[in-house]
Image: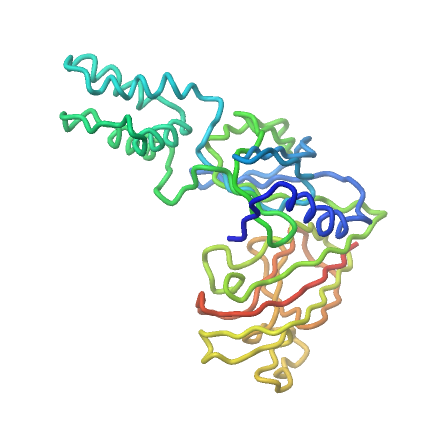
Length: 335
């Protein structure tokens, strides 16, 4: 994960990268695709245009059109931490009824209580209680089960923007995220959301050009943990788009051979796909929508979309090896 530690550097990157890439893009409808903890996926448009991210070293305002992905953490700065800690300390009470009452109170907290309790456990004031039933770890475990949160879930929100940059903090999203959908206005509890995919629609009268870096040590089609990179560009059926790429990658999973975006290996020409645009190892591929067909983009692809959805990019290989190296620099033009 590439983190940026200084606000001044973040502002500079946004000025030089994000805004430059979107200079010809007018503000249009921005869509959210919510992946919920129960497995449901809900899509709709949002009225939000700027996301405020609060971090230990300051706050950053990000245009939502520059953001591709938000992974929701469990931290909620609006919670009364002092009250929660006092309730946790009551677990050390000599009165079993008071212990039980405090424990039940901890188990009724919202998901953000998990981060408060974990922070408390790491503090000097935390003392392990003698009883084996009403404990802070037990309360955390119950909350994690209640909200379907595992140990890998981040405490803070993780925001990915301008293709390769990632920051951690707390978004200014309210307890209820509002979406305008085909079923009317929906309000989804923040606690129920695992991730949010963000995409900005392109209006009929405009085109957009954006550039991305597709990393060999992450963006492999066979990588089930986010191998396909969501560009945030929404392609509409019947509209033309173009993908151009250059660069080299070395795939440890394929005997350390070096590939170019068209699938050429160790300096040799790309294999002949017979004009089918069938994926070949090491080549740049794309798909429209999460469940779309995987198609070879190569060094240059020009075509008309047959379906609508977000554009995803990856390097084609069925086995993921984190020791891969190199990248492809990709430019997208879409109507």
